[in-house]
Length: 110
Image (cartoon, rainbow, N blue to C red; front, side, top):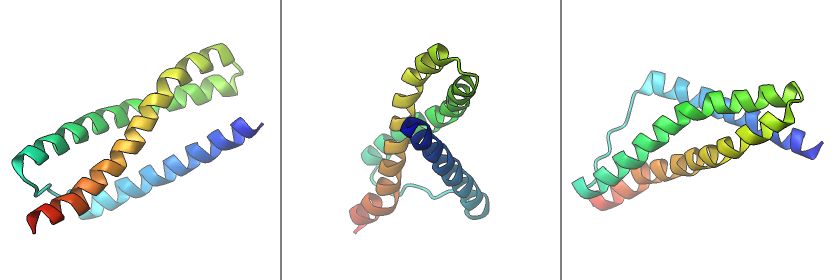
């Protein structure tokens, strides 16, 4: 039962974050990375993988939830084993992207 509550909390908090993120960027647009070219290349590589995997993780999460609701735990478990590492990567790289964009780049500029 604890697993169900934790996963529901994770799903709701992720959905709220995604909604807020999309609404914010719909009104404020994008922010350009203003760091040195070598660091910018690293930033863009992380951003690209983050973005692609963030798009991929949505149907994976929804599929995992549907399998769990339908009590198809064999399929749920198999899909969740793929979904979790991708979701964790997206979560961690999101924080790294934020830090690089709003803390590292300004510090490197002076």
